[in-house]
Amino acid sequence: MTEEKIDEGIDEYESSQNFTEAEKVALRYSELMDTCPERIDEKFYSELAKHYTTEEIIELGVYIGFNVGYHRFFGTLDFYPMFAPDGKLVDQKTSREIYGDTPVSQLKGTSEHKKFSTAAE
Amino acid sequence: MPMVDTVPLETLAQSPLRSLIDKVRDQKIPDPLFFQIFAHVPGYTEALFDALHRSHMEGNVDHKLKEIIRIRLARLAGDQYFSNLRSEVAIDAGLTEEIIEAGCGEFEGDKRFNEAEKWALSYAKLMYTEPKKVNKRFYQKGKAYYSEAEIMELGAFIAFHYGLQVFMRTIKAFPLHDKDGNLMTHAESQKYYSGK
Image 1 (cartoon, chains in turn brown, purple):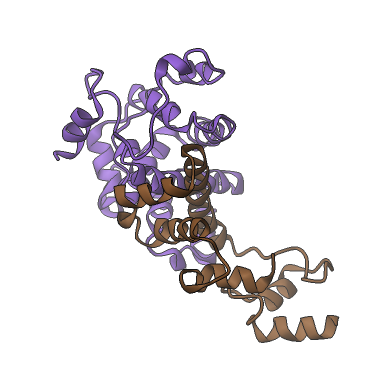
Image 2 (cartoon, rainbow over the protein chains, first blue to last red):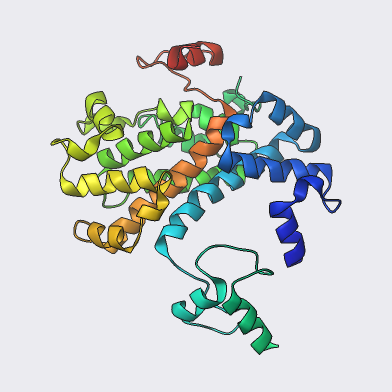
């Protein structure tokens, strides 16, 4: 797994050649669950069932729902990772400078993140 | 039927999930349909049930308050299953439908809620509608009424329940029983609770 693939899986999966149809429908499931759950209808579940067992659909659905719920809560707590990308323990202020206060691609990143990555190299 | 097949109750009666079903039989939240849906992934069921049940039934924050929050979040998520279930524990403790409606509505000006309860209800209301307002100042205000442990209890409760309810909404499950406790088919329950 690479940062490029993560970004593609978030922003451009529909047109990407790097994801199978099964992966695309799972990614679509996660996008819709958070943004427009009303579009997850019987037809959508039939599409999911072409690629996944009932067990896998439940697993995915619960996982996505849990993440939808939890990330919003964690976002309000204003916590940042304990470690910089190079594994060094950092304080919360430094971590915020590295990662930025809005979740973005770690490739595009904040200017501080880029500076830190360059310095670490 | 819900969007996924349900495991028959007779099958569950022989499974380790039987003890969980029995545990909540009197509390009525969730009802056995929850286990019939999630039994496809038994390991998940136990972990999920544990998180939901503990956050709802245990802790220091008043259970009746958490019950109002749970229903509010289920309605926000569009989840017909959880929004129509009621905790018998909360009802036995005096929670009424009138208070639930008041807590799910314009509670800010309602004298039936004290300031601490209003903060908790705001916390639930804002988390998924205007999360930017759940900021440092908001948390500072909450600390006037709740310990940090209680704030984390509330926050985790809100997160667990809202997340699962978002998923349950898409499943289109409805409670197994009507308000008098009579067992219904899925079609009957859908008509009973949604009018459609």
